[in-house]
Image 1 (cartoon, rainbow, N blue to C red):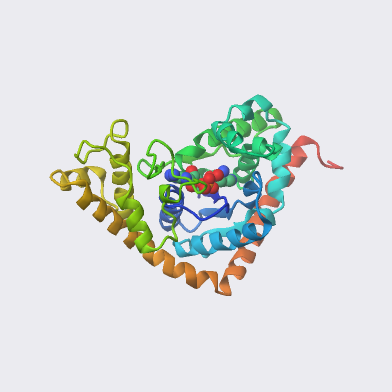
Image 2 (cartoon, rainbow, N blue to C red):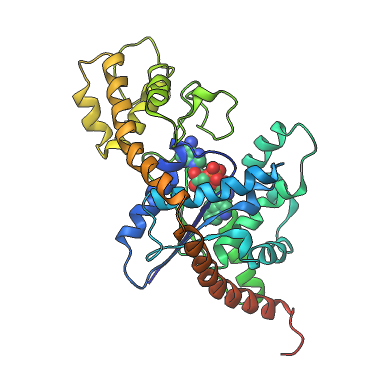
Length: 333
Ligand code: AMP
Ligand code: TRP
């Protein structure tokens, strides 16, 4: 029996990076899981609030992400799907874990340093404490494995440290989780600057492919992806970051190894290669988009989220009360 936990922030339209780096792996793990495994996949709305959000847009994005999870193949009979803020234990464990987290550890987080610089108005204290909330998300369910993209590795390391620290200070309580980061696809790069990760919040629209982009838009974005003038199709992220990124995308989208692709295109030009990358991405996303529209307007959606909330709450309550007891937050022993 194993437990798997992961989440995504509903902070805008999801990118191909989110799909290949995260959701695709959630679905694979779900489909390979045995009946007694527990899989919790949630919508990290509390995390989205670490930077300013328009309330109406946030509401919409939460629903949209729920529909997208289903459209991508998450099955509510196998995975518990829920909205983070509806299981209030998340906020509570986040606070309790802050009491054993050092400010210095948080100030060292590279994602914090990046995001802080991008904030025009004030930087919220929640942006600093965000990795502690994330640790809480994971420890509440005693996760064994956490499938994420490369950018979350440092947050997982902190989570492991906090679990070990709590266990040694208050006696064994939490499972120390392991990150699961795919070999290919864990860091899909921007199409316009392939040294930067593809991100939902990139100001340049054509830098990212969104899961819900229309076919002609996807084709245009891939055709105008930045490459190099060398002319050969090789996997070399340092010297050929653009072509290497397209190879990673193609490999994940078509479930073909990079080696096979390099062999197949050894005599081809960039134009032909890009066209085939675009075909693979369109074929991957089209069925997801069709299912998305179905789920977004379906009645099942709320029912699935209600059931998910109830199931997640049951586990979260148990862990939280154990944790509080150990910390002395209990009236009678
Ligand atoms: P976020 O959009 O920050 O909530 O990220 C949700 C999940 O997608 C996390 O597991 C990230 O590591 C993953 N992810 C985000 N951007 C990328 C990317 N460009 N390539 C691969 N994985 C990504
Ligand atoms: N912080 C993650 C991100 O931005 C999302 C997230 C929140 C998460 N809580 C989590 C991922 C717990 C895995 C497990 O990508």
